[in-house]
Length: 330
Image (cartoon, rainbow, N blue to C red; front, side, top):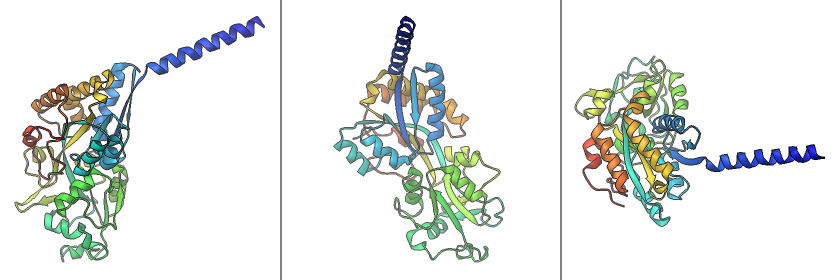
């Protein structure tokens, strides 16, 4: 009897100890863009190592739009975004009393890609991409030869970012002239690895997503140079940074809840993110921002300057200089 009692007390002590340990672990909730995910995940891994289990950082990939839905309902602390917050999302945040701090963390080129066996489409004009992707193309523009007569009379199989993705929003804004204005008969996915496999397995395919995923899969994909009227330019670190790759270059962001930013673990995580970003962005093959921008990010976060400098607009062609040209507005 005494032995059972002692064992019972020991079990209770162990359970209580485990509960205390669990209670002490702080949680940082992040969701949003699959494009920004590799950067944030790399930062989260390094931060958790440094904190030795005291903070658990969860990073989801429901897409920029899906991430903002959760963020503006107050369900997450940080939202990864491959485009600026839009007017309708700003309104939802206002309705729910969610204030946010907008922090650019990297630059990305949105790449158009084909299968490595494709020998004909080395470059395409913005006008040709519009013909292919605009809503009127659905069920009508279905073969390569309809883009250029000397291209194969074969069906084009299209792949692209999911419709809840900031990449989809930005691509359609830049190519068709209106966000979310696109043909619907293409394979869409929030998971860029699904798109890599689709394009990589089909000689007559074409698709679009972030340049970093191409960098990870150069054996499965082939870049298409884009001609915006000044001659074909392929995406690369150089052409994205110098602004010559247009109109598919863009900054990518994290948005931090002002309320969450008051928590010590969130404050510490964001400061760690911005101080580590330059190194970790390069590590995951994205394009880092100048050190001066990360310094301005830290100043904006320290001052809790809420709002967006983009006024609810995706703003195609935004440059690095545009990121801090204006004060953020709610």
